[in-house]
Image 1 (cartoon, rainbow, N blue to C red):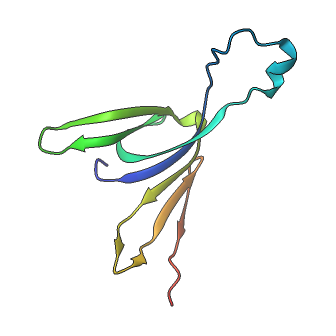
Image 2: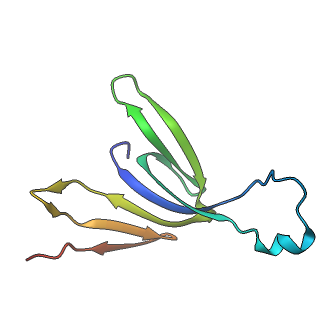
Image 3: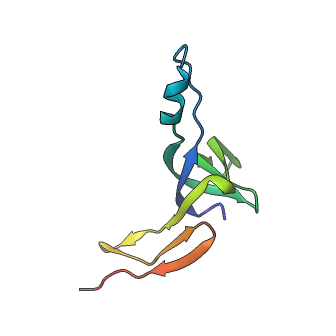
Length: 105
């Protein structure tokens, strides 16, 4: 799992510190769609943990994001491109996995 590089799209909460917010403005405040690309260092039924940096020899990682599964929109497993041709990409959207095949010329 530590070798998987993924792009996770999720809906994040907001914390507003703009001063006083009028009641009529509240319906306009929405959660923020976010993307992160990094190493999947842990996943269980409640969360996925993504690290943007890792050190194999030292066994550590840095810039860690813990994302609740209930807020995830999509997970894309990224794969190496060889000879300018992409390989198969696995996509998971709310737990459903599908395969997308690369187009061949």
